[in-house]
Structure formats: C-alpha cells, structure tokens
Image 1 (cartoon, rainbow, N blue to C red):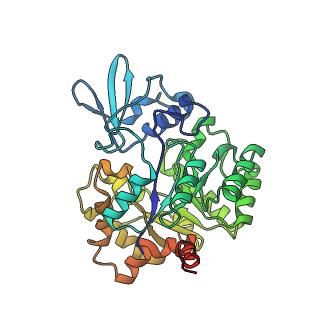
Image 2: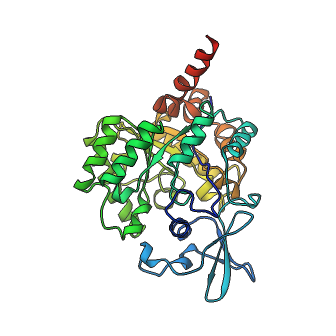
Length: 375
C-alpha cells in the first residue's frame, strides 16, 4: 500500500477558512510567503524577487509584515502590491484556477498517481483545519487519515486544550500537526518547550497521538536556531515516552546537505537518531524549482539518509496540491518509486507506506469497516 504522509485539502482561500476572519487568514498566508520557495515576480516585467519583500528587514514576526493588500488571485497566484507595483507569488499550481482543494480533487490525483491512502496535514495558511480535515476523513475513511491543529504558541491555554479534546475525541482526528512558524503571530514570546506547555504535551502523551513537527528555524531562520530547536526537541522526546514524532519536511538540505551528503552536527544527529522520531522524505516542494526531475541531488540525499538512519525511519510525503507548481503528483512519487534504485523493494515498501501505516495503524482502521460490511 502506497501512503502519502503529507497532503492537504482546503476550502476556498477567498474566505476565512475556519479562522475568525479573512484578515487573520491572509496574515498567515502572507507570513508563509515571506519564506516561500515558490516563484515571486513583479507583474509588469516578470522580474523575480524573494518573498522577503513582504516583510520589514529584521522583524520576522507578524509585526514585521508589510501592508501589501494581499489578495487571493487566480491560477494558483497570490497577488500583492508594494509601492504601487503589483507582484505575484506562484504558490499553487498554475492549473488551479481558484485556490481551493476539495477532497475529491485529492482522490482524483491519488487514483492517477497510484497512491492508496493519504495523510491530511494542516497549516494555518490553509485555514483552521480541524473541522474540514474531519469532514474529509469521515467522508472517505478508506482514503484519508487526518490530523488536528492547535494555536501552537497558546496550546497550553484552557481554550486550546478544549479544542484539542474536541478535535481528538469528538472529531476523531488521529495525529497532531505542530509548526513553529506560528510563533511569529505573537512575536516569538514563548518557546515550544516552555514549562507552560507541559499541560499540552502531557495531554498528547496521555492520548498517545503522533506529532508531526515542522521545525522551522525560528526566530531568525539560521542554522544556529535550528540546532537549538533540535536540542529542545530531543529533551521533549526524552520526557514524553508515549509520543511518536515525525520531522515534517525532513532535514534542511540548505543547512546540512550542500555537498550532496548530509553533514549533521552532533546535537542535530542526536535528535534525528532518537527512536521516537521518523523523518519525512520530501524534496520537490522545496527544491523542485532548482533541481530537475528525477532529482538526482535528492536521490543522493535519500541514499545517505537510508545509510545513516535505516529505511525504517523514513516516510515519503508530497505536499500536494502545492507541489504541482514544480512537478506532477506522480513525479513527486516516482523520483523515489522508480529512480531510487539503491533501495531494496522492502525498503521502498517501508518508505512509501509501510512505516506510516505502522505509525497511524491505517491498514487496520481501513480494513475494519470493510470486514464489518462483509458480515
């Protein structure tokens, strides 16, 4: 069974998408654009720019976001204006005439690519996803396993602890998405391992839910920041023995993979080697604009990860539908499925579905309704 551990469904970005307002939703979207790998260009001449044009230098929090009248455009674009000049970010694929991705779009993509099951992640730019993810999972339980989100910097509050209980117990969501870039909203005023967060982590530990952890190198996006985050994560993994963790997006190749082989500092390697941690294999979404399919650079890094950690630690993800700005869904799978010839068949089976199946017990859950229906 091929399982994609990282994909999304979402409502039209023209609306609030579960947030209290469309304005809050757009602020989250703009923050994502400040560090996007997508093409950002000026409308009048196509000249390319970095997403850093969207914020004030030296302030990576929401307070540093410029007033750019961010709009949700057509054909996968986000539009904004700076000093009277219009710009576009080609954040979604050009073929996405409106920025919306219902469950049926993902189902059609899965059928075409040969993917049997998909794990629906979240992210504040997509919206407040608990209800919509639950809707997709309940509608197509044999095809989707969905995770929940909380307001990460305020996850310890009574309001967010109640939302965790609702999402897990009432909605039936089966894993926790936890991304560090959300800390920008509050000016990075707390760390994810702050003692106030103990109530939240203890609740996850008691529920024995996996945590999909996106380790953005906040607050300054430096290699030094990242290493510190890995030290803190290792401490959490030591404390909460019932939590399994997934490193969303995998290791940052821009820090540690520049030579074509991984070169991890000891503190980072210590976290990666922890028995509770799995690592996403997902390169096209970040590097597909610079590397050409079938991504031999990524293949080399995957081989080195296999050699360093073993295939049992790796899980494949695509980041659909976003990844189609660089390649097709099938290509985001086939660079591993067809071209990583150094992997044994059993290793491919593990990376492309077996490991995440064990983590989330997907096969066991999806087969149970079929067995009951047969009776």
